[in-house]
Length: 247
Image 1: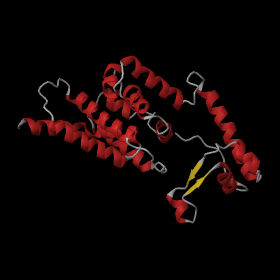
Image 2: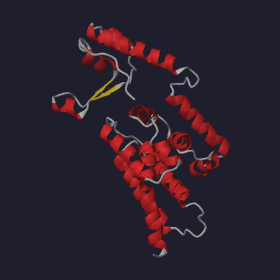
Image 3: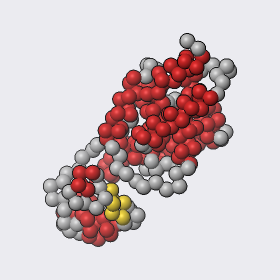
Image 4: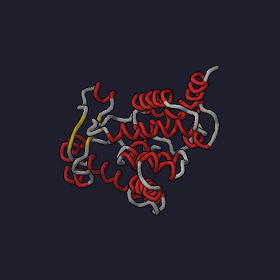
């Protein structure tokens, strides 16, 4: 087996882990597959004589590709996250060799709620958070990927944590859940009572309602923009709806 065959074999063994990492960063399984494939093109074209840790090198290459892809997104139409994609991306990581990174990918923190939170982050923060908090990369390596100092890379991950937790990283989880439940219940009560003003009050002015495929197939608008339009969509509805905690 020559060096190229050996490199290809090692990359293929790492592909499920790299795909799961890229999916967290990009939020799309198709984009993740593209990033991993582009990573292979970079890896296969480079010399590996001075590479001591191939798996770490693969991680660095794909992370840089993901960062470039995130930075190149000037605007992207939001689409509902597909639960099947999330399950496939996470389950695929189980095919990788055991170790801290694959264990992290399979952790309970992988879920649609986290992916929604990650999608709100600027590119460098998203990459720093995923690499450090999920894959355990040291800030020195993250600094090289993001083009910052280790201290700045640490700040990126810290800011990402605050954003994902709603700006309250030290608040007890029970307190955050209680606040979220109060908002959800206020929304449902206003919806049931046809309280248009009450609905608008609990919505962000720029809220976007995206219908899933089933709703669109039954005649719902694919996208509704703005607090008033969304409030009008829900006014007088939710008669039997109940709040539920998902992921």
